[in-house]
Image (cartoon, rainbow, N blue to C red; front, side, top):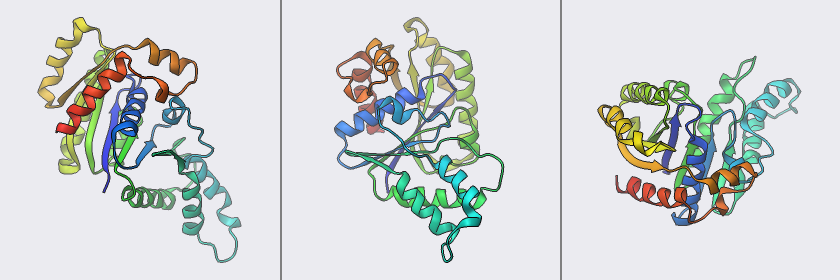
Length: 251
């Protein structure tokens, strides 16, 4: 079964950039294939790696609800959804992408979402790593959509609200018992003068401190220009991510 890295935290802390840099590192250093799962409704993970996503799971969900009464004779809902799911997986060298897209709208999605969870579980056997960029906040954790996680990384920036979010995440994952194997905190773009104070605030939560991603103009310019972070090398953030991933793999 794949080893799962899930990235979470308050909105605006840099979760997607962090997830993209992790995917980039694994693409260069991991042996086996990687699945990048964008579970954030904003759906930016593939964008910052310049990977076109023609259709999301949200699109498929809407199509299914809209077309359910028009299915050909002999085709079940399950057959229709399974066929669509395999088309949604975007394959690139060493890394495949699945994008969740927009959240649920009006209508009944229970059956569709059950198949989606089963599909995701089946896919895990085909990959060495799964990297999940989660939506902001706690909903994905409280709904247990982030289950069987090897490494949960909470991204925290200078905002005190990000620390509060980390505390609430700690409370939720404590109730999940063994579903999260290792819990980490990663600082992103933190003012060096505040780093020790933030570490002290986070220390009671028991997170493993992975390090800090520094502000990186090269990364910022690449994202602003709509270019792939795959092409950013030997910069402060990529060098820091190399150390961060090596530390994570030691746990």
